[in-house]
Amino acid sequence: MHLCTGFVTSGLELWQGHKCAEDYFRERIWGSLSMTQSFYNNASCWFEHMQLDEKTGMDPEDRAIRLRAAEGLEAVDFFMPGYHVWAKLIESLGDFGYDSNSLVVVLSHSWGDNVFRNFMRWAENEQSGWCEKHLEAYVNIAGPVLGVPKAVTACLSGEMRDTAQLGSLPAIMVERVMPRTTRSRLFRTWGSLIGMLPVGGPNIWGNGTWAPDDTPAMRAANESHGSFISKKEGPYPWSVNWESFKGALTIRNLHDKADLILSKVNLKGRAERKKNYIDHDVETNDIDQAMAILLNVTSKQFQDNVELYGAVHTDELSETGAKQWPEKEFLNPLKDPLPEAPSMRMYCMYGVGSPAERSYHYQHVEDANDLSNEDKTEARRAEGREDMHWKINTEVHDPELGIVGGVRLSDGDGTVPIISTGLMCYKGWRTKRLNPSNIPIVSREYVHQPTSAFKDLRGGPLASAHVEALSNVHLMRDVLKVVAGIGHTLEDDLSSDVPKIAEQIHCFDDDTC
Image (cartoon, rainbow, N blue to C red; front, side):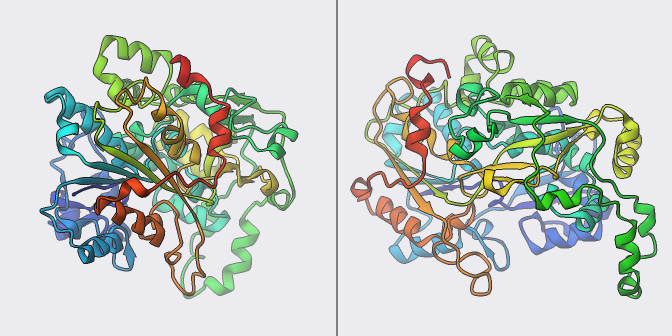
């Protein structure tokens, strides 16, 4: 058996670095307590070592930095002490009789699915029939098959739901430690984020006024996930002058200065967040237009990287490129079929019932004078970078429509929406064009049912959020059945709206996805 780990569930060790990181040689700076220690001791040093070469996507050639993947099962069992990832599943496999010499089934998690599917295509090119000869089953756990929306916002403005919705004071403190411009610059060097830019264009993700996963309440309110970025022009709704906080944030005087701190924060517009607040005087942008916005504010090198390594669907970046370089289709599950392996079985297992980021309300500022004080400072440092003019508009808030702090949410596993985890498994890979040898596909969904955090910080045995799914008892039971050679007894088990979403998407049949 092989495990193909994901974006978070991997460890990275420092093998060569600068003086500021010399204490962490052969230590993990991604996926351990030493990561946390190195970050808080010197955030700029950590960012510098985590940033890849923008042109090659490899080690920075001009900075003598080398990170390498940690090896062995111990590299993936825990992200850090107390935060298990593959540990419980590995333990269950051990109890069952699995050891590292077994080689029948491949398990992937998250980004590992994208990696392994591309590996299968490469292996087939190297030796036709390789997958049929060597693979009994492939289990895709929580794979972002069609990408993740937050990859766009991470690269556009250095934001995701977690950072955008921190609230006033925490957000300010985070900005001081890792400003948005620093985060976005780091994210744009990571090929995995480029590879997770949403695939399929408006046919999959919606056309500005419609999307296949819009809820009835959204349609009644003229809200749609199809408007991937709803843009509002004008100054940011609130801004903070960090200078007001100097000398206030110390253990000695924090209590006495609390009123001063709060009085210095301009909370104009924050009260409206308690109400249903949606301004429909916005510009709608579908996923292709959102990608155009992203490419317009990024470097030529980033644009080239998206063209080379991204599967994002636009005429310029996907289809035309594929005609000139057929291997590019490997990156696009809507273009590249599964391998010819009729004896292999494929299983898609993923969580549902935990809202995931799907689309966004953004504030765009044309006049640099209307930027927040922090963004003015960062824009000056970064020579007026255009990406500082974009920020998630956290004032847009209507939980009844699934809008929380400027982020429209849809069903998913808390990280990946079901349109990405479930659509290809339920429909796309059940077509002759994308599954020519008719590999049996089984879709299994696990409803997120976390226990109280007081009982288990990770959600307990029935949690099925993106990472927690790896220790979901029902998912582990199904994996053991596949490993035991009785995976054929598993059938589709769906509780989400994936079937209804699939009914509204017709491009699989006529090859227009």
